[in-house]
Image 1: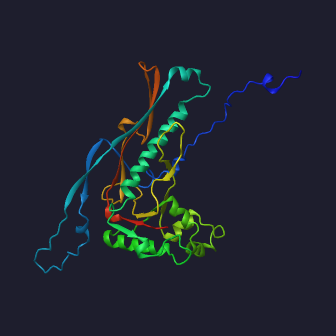
Image 2: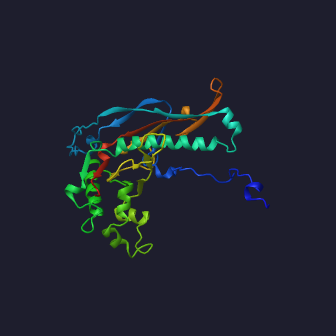
Image 3: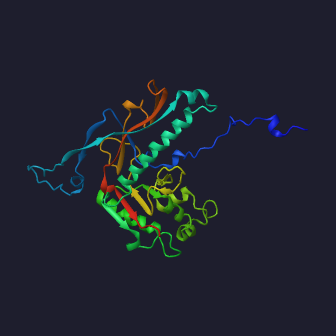
Length: 317
C-alpha cells in the first residue's frame, strides 16, 4: 500500500502568512485633519482674542495737536483637557510560550486600531455633527445633491460657503473633509467629470483633480469603518461609516502657533506616552500569569474656531 499525503506530511501553520482585517491607519481622519498641539500638562488654558474687534473700521482722521482715536481688543481664555483613551489585552504566559505565532505585533496593532476607532467616533461627534459650526448648510434644501444625474454643481456650493466663511472671519477655507459615501459620489459627478475630462488621467477623478476643482489645499476622506454589531457566540459584522452624507469645509493652518486661527486643534499630552499620540506598553501581571499589552492616547479634539467651518449635510441621497 502506497502512503497517502497525511502519512508523509503533518500540517502546520505557515510562518510567513496570516490574515487580519487591519484597517489602514490612513483611512482614519481623526489625527490628520487638524494640527496637533503638543502640550506639557494634561489640562490647561489658551488665549483667545475677540474676533469681531479685529474687523471694525475704527481708525479716524487726526487733526493737528489732538489725540488720536483709541481702540482696543478683548482677550479671554478657553481650555483643553487631554482625556485618556485606553484599552488593554492580556496574553497568558502559557499561551505565549506555546504559540507558534509571535503575538506581540498583532496585539499592538489590534489595540491601536481600537483606539483609532474611538478617536474617529469622537471626531465625528465633535466636527461632523449639526450645530457645532456657525454654518450648517443643507444641500438638499438649497441646491442640488451631488449624486444627482444632472444639475449638481459642487464647486458652486463650496464657493458659496468659502465666501461666507471669508466674510465672517477674514480667512478662506482651505480644507475639505468628506465622508466616504460623498467621496464616492464625487467620483461619478457629471459636472466634475466634464470639467476635468481634458486634464490628467483621461477624466478619471483623482484627488489632485478634486483639489483643483474645489480650490482647496487639503482633502481628507473618512474612509474607516466600524462594526456596529454586538459581540455574539456566532459573530456578526455590520459595517458602518462613522459619518455619512456630509462635507466639512474649514480653515486649517499649516501649524499651530501664536495669533494663529484654526477651525480645530488636536491637543496631545505626550508625557505619559513617550511623546507619541498613541502608545503601546506592556508589563507582567504575576497574579494573572499574563502579560498585559495596553494602549493609551491622551488627546482632546477641540473645535476652536466655529466660524472657520461650514458643515454641509444631505449632500447626497
